[in-house]
Amino acid sequence: MPKKNKAPVVDQKEELLAYLQEGETLTSVANKASMPSLSTLHRWIREDNDYSIQIENARVQGAIFYVEKLIELTEQDVKPQDVMWIREKISTYKWLASKLLPQFSERQHITSHNKHEVVNISWKGSMSTCPKCGWEDKTELSS
Image (cartoon, rainbow, N blue to C red):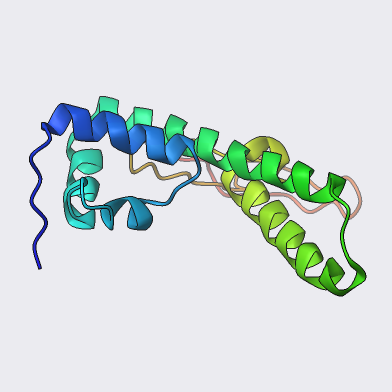
C-alpha cells in the first residue's frame, strides 16, 4: 500500500538526517509512515550533492552512535549466560566501526565524494637499476 506523504520535502530531508544521526539505516527510515520510499531517498542523495554530503556526515555520526553503544556494552554487568551474545554484539559493532569510520580502521582510506576517480599505480619508472642484481630498465617512460 503506498504511503501518503503530506510533510514538505524539506522537512522530510531534515527528518532523514536526524534519523541517520541516531544510527538508523535508510531502509528502516523508508519504512516509517512519515517518510518517502527508499528509491526516493536514494534519488535525493544522488541528485543533490550538498545534501549527499550532509547524509554522509549524518551517517558518520550514526556510526559513532554505535561506537558509543559498544562502550556501554563493555561497561555493563552481564550474566554468564549472556556473555557470548554480548561478545557477538561487540564484535559486530567493532567491525562496523572499522568499515564505516576511517579512524577505527586498520587500513588507509582514500575518500572521494560522489566522484568516479581512477587511481593508477605503476612501478614503471620507480627504479631504473636494481642495486642487488644490476638489472636495468631499458624501456622509455611515456609521461
